[in-house]
Image 1 (cartoon, rainbow, N blue to C red):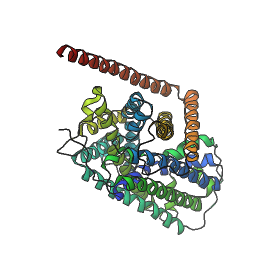
Image 2 (cartoon, helix red, strand yellow; image 1 turned 90 degrees about the vertical axis):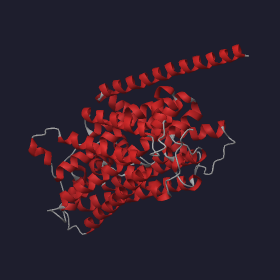
Image 3 (tube, rainbow, N blue to C red; image 1 turned 180 degrees about the horizontal axis):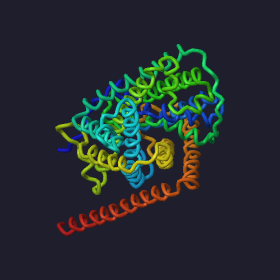
Image 4 (spheres, helix red, strand yellow; image 1 turned 90 degrees about the horizontal axis):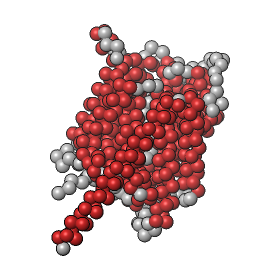
Length: 452
């Protein structure tokens, strides 16, 4: 008897997954670069608000798809139904080989960076690669917790998300007590708005994660939509408040030129302990995002394995643990491998941006495609503002794909070549498995005819 996922995620659990994944280390590390592309204080608030609204436009598209097809795998399921199994396969392959391990590695390194800022006991023993050790250890421990069971994984997520949200509100509260700031006159080079928007939408990344665990949500017809909207809206409000606090305490130029913006902000009131408090908060934020990425990412690999024999081991759901154990293990091993080879935070974002927004675009368009292909499918929720909101989000995705590829072509050609090679391997894998599958079907039909 095949073991299937159980419905164990409440509305609070589901919202915590979304908020917890979105609020990682990006808000702390990317805020100055985003400010450079916004060109003014009001521009900073405007670009963060635009990012929140665009993410909401994307989220409501996913809400329609997730409530109509409440299965594990999210985009994998929708792309397969809209365009064919090849599209779902390529999505699962890219997520398994590039995107999800890369996201996990980014958050693991963010945690390691800030835990060393608090204190690095390994430094006294001559370890020159303690950052990698901390990053790998965090990945291994959280993977193990999620293997133990859904309850362990979701409660870890709930606690970390609650603490990080309260921490962001604390930054706003501290900023409100800040004395009059001294204007900063340091010069800096502005960034293109398109690049700033890529960074903004990266920090909002994660609003679609609810779709990957749709089969485990209680009362999915209502709670999936609620979690997507509540999570996206809550993060937008928090990001606007925090950036407002940065601008109030540091000013626009101070924000754009800061090397540790949250620390600089809190240190205006708490100069002695501000750095340690922020480092601890970033560690918690990174761990919350890391746990959520591990939790949901394994569901994509599980869906891939359940449909394709080449990855069959990933498609096994443990009856004892109630989790996709093998998918979690393989995902953790690949992420650990990337940790050993990891480059810079920004380069990794740009490396993964093109495939991420390519699939965002394809999935959002599948809202339109599936309304035509499967008009009789019940849709408990239909996209608000359809088709305008869907098309606006699709247009932004197309623009960001172009921007990311253009930047990689002129500045990071090696990463573009590597990305293309991995995509080509995925195409070959699908072609080979598809041929074998077709051959098995022909052999089965021939055998049945002989038996008759």
